[in-house]
Length: 259
Image (cartoon, rainbow, N blue to C red):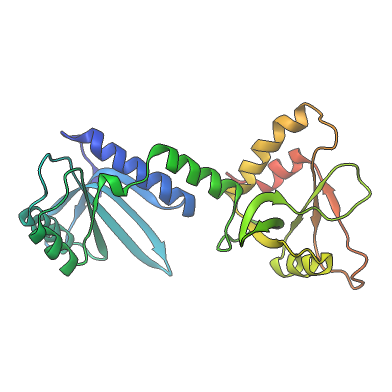
């Protein structure tokens, strides 16, 4: 696989690349996303793809090729057939076609039969929508997120996290955001708090970085009653005597943030 020089229609391809790169990185920062790529097929031929990304799950490499058609007329069956010919020569390669002008009926039927996803530019999220997705992913982790390395407690409303952290009771004048190494320990702690509108969420590295970045200017201005962090490392023998270790923002950043 290697990159080639940009060609006509590169602005359209660049936009499609930006959209997919932005969305994919919300889920998996280890996914490779490239544009204007040559991939060698089983036949020995090299096939050009406008946007290409690959990732490995369960030790299996998965590939997706995206064909960008910046045409003023609907895409014909012949164009889809041509794209399928390239796809079928490469192992584990799924296909997506994106165009401004839509597709002829024969093209849609052919693509559906061979498992090619066909989209128009209207199917892609806009820049504000992508920004909103990025902010939501950074500050509103869903249940699929694994702690890297922390788990925390968040307020919920109508089954969705609100972005507000549930802070355990303490003698401190500041709110204390609790961080846990273990999801099970966090769930046990939350159960004892008896908070009805709360849940445990994993905090991956991107979300930890977003939180630290958000907190740094607040700390630098020395606002009163701002938030602090405590690590609750394990479940105690006596459920009324939980150990909470204060941790400074600098230590959190230097010792636990790796990106």
